[in-house]
Length: 255
Image (spheres, rainbow, N blue to C red):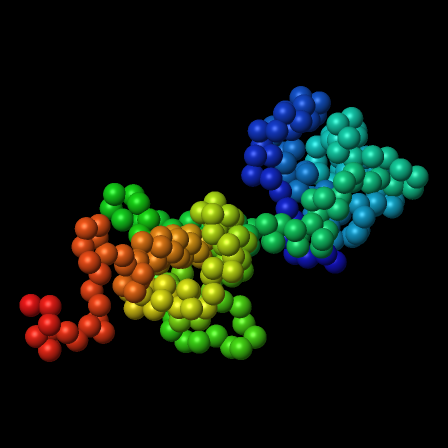
């Protein structure tokens, strides 16, 4: 016994093959669909593969009260005559335990999709735009063997934590574009960047943070190149350099 229900399509009434069965038997749709219900329900109760030994086309006509239904079903390949009985073709696609499981699974998935769509509608603002959920940065340090936040997905939005490290693939590409060597991104170079942005709680993707780091280091290197050490400064043309060891002023010399 496969179960106490069978699967029937909601649009079966308007199927053109139902119309052909009505024409062949000179019966209305209600009689034809009622006869099909008996046939499919009986097969669901008594067979697992659609084969019904001992059942004849004449018996189908008698049990359904629709003369000629058995032959009409065979003509449209909804029934096949086999040795010792009849068979419902493709029975396992629409009936039986496996077909019912597939039907229930499809219904469950449809319910999940409907529920997800309903939740999405609830999160929409009056203008129709979805509200962006607040992303709260976590300041809990990860375990020693865990990867930095966002490392598994460079496009995931994150807030910088004190343990943040740049995405190496993106870093290599951005550094090459900026003309910077990878060895420029030492812990001493990354730490000021993290310490500057971590308290702000800003949210960007892991890839965007990496690009910002490259610009940060590039700017620091440019600024450093512009600084001229005091001990290397040269005197202006036409002016005598200051001699800090000259003490003649104290002896009244040179006046």
